[in-house]
Length: 314
Ligand SMILES: N[C@@H](CC/C=C/[B-](O)(O)O)C(=O)O
Ligand SMILES: [Mn+2]
Ligand SMILES: [Mn+2]
Ligand SMILES: [Mn+2]
Image (cartoon, rainbow, N blue to C red; front, side, top):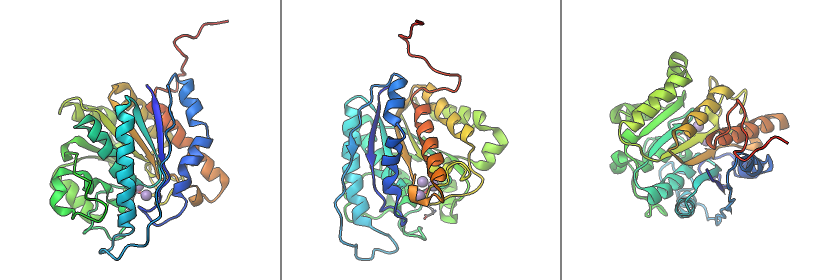
């Protein structure tokens, strides 16, 4: 299970500086060493560098369109290469607009895929429904075949083709969905497990239903796009758009443990860790530590303990 952190320190999909520092904090917390201790052959592809761009001329409400487009084109090529190297791709954000490039590149390598989107938010505003202009609230609309007519071709986005079907997406953790997003989710019949369903069913049943739902359409490679703000801010406060009433640490980890055991996990995004948004160093430490544990759950760490196959008692 080779973990491959390719990280993208990028913040232009939203307005708060600091999220570009997320990858370094996750690395500094020892992600690579912890993955290697699980038996993973880890290759760190390093940080993608993004050229500074002059400010865009206004495009409706949209912010930093050309920078986001260029960054995601570069990320798409990088993720495709990691997948074609035969690895499970890990993209460390940076903000959630990066899921555009991550999922596009993953799909370029594997074709049809399923998306499990773990997030307080649906991130499915279109360029015309967004009320903030922040593209980290829009990535899903750029990726869905069914919304192609609702997403104009934007500067530096001409490379992007929709590559995901609405029926192959499952949302988990929703609790802050805009009216237009809710309309879109209902119109397209997208499978969602909001925090109400997490409370009602429990996380084990949510994951059982998620996997049954996705496998009913054929066992496609799974792209897990994990926004750290899915986790309750009491555990992961250092993020740009915190929302109360989130997943517990245990629920968050259970989701990754369960997806790992499907054997279908093919790429993981871990985004929106923003060290500058923590009130204290403990806030940042707790957020980063949770992000690392979520990633370790994706690659086989289980809470009962692990030991390497070749371990022998002294
Ligand atoms: N729906 C809001 C919030 C977006 C949140 C994005 B996030 O999930 O990537 O944190 C917007 O469109 O700006
Ligand atoms: Mn998000
Ligand atoms: Mn979010
Ligand atoms: Mn965000």
